[in-house]
Image (cartoon, rainbow over all chains, first blue to last red; front, side, top):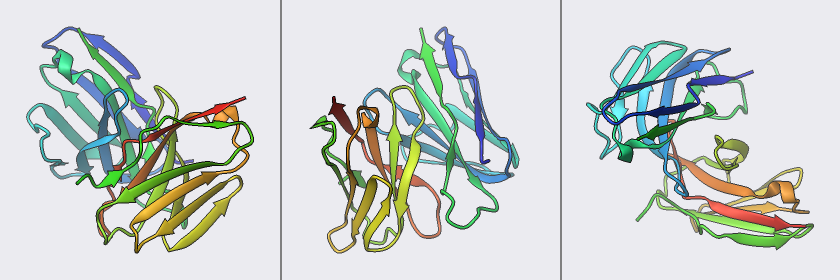
Length: 119
Length: 112
């Protein structure tokens, strides 16, 4: 149980393109989803917290107009990297928090990540 | 000061040895602490978490928490080459919130 599907797993596109990444909780409802970014040999950096039906909360230094987050349902959050440039190339990982977690369950369930390469 | 700090390593141990990974955190109010393992190009996977002072054991893994020192550690007994990965320490940001703040990770290499 507690599967998070992230799509696509790998994207290569030209500079200036906008890229949408989907994060779906397949067998549970997620009122909160998180978006992380990881550069090579670096840690996961929290970009934003996405709450269903409300605006996302962005971490300091993350441009909200650059990284558009939509959490329209309890099972889907999307991250759109607008006008992507080579410096946006990174590993993007989403995670989801179960609306009804069972006792002792982990706090977040991670997707498999999306590797974004901007040429 | 970074919220969660780890020595990036690499930490090299021979097969069968005990690997000791360490983590310090800055927010004294932190309540929950997590260890994740991440293989190259993959998402992190949870190994174990700990809430209270003392030790928590799960198979070959033991997590230790010292709140007074703001220090968390992970011991891996009988290390195997398959344990070679990056180990990420994470702290739940605060009691009300749910965001996890990760350390940079320690790379562990277990040689056969």
